[in-house]
Image (cartoon, rainbow, N blue to C red; front, side, top):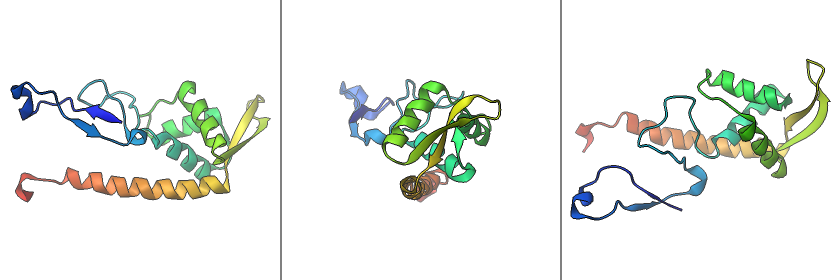
Length: 150
């Protein structure tokens, strides 16, 4: 996958289009503007799967609505999880064998599907957690980057 860089560059004065960068499509967020949204943010692709797996790992079996509310709560309401995001992600995680589901009754007496992390999901969570920690440590280094380090 290639994305076009939307920033002002020196080559633009020469009448050339911005360069194309080769990127991994699994870790790209399509953003309409040059700035990250300040409202309930969109996430990098793949981040939500990690959050669902981590939530089920920490909390045990939960139904879909409870998973969404817990993720919103942990994010201090910086994220808004809708059904159009949640249920396709749960289906995908289940198809990968990383979560399982069974029908049960919620605290309000409604019949709901409860999701649990599987052994395969635990292994996947460990892999994703290591990947995200490594990525976060790399990005963190750029917060402290200064002109003095040229």
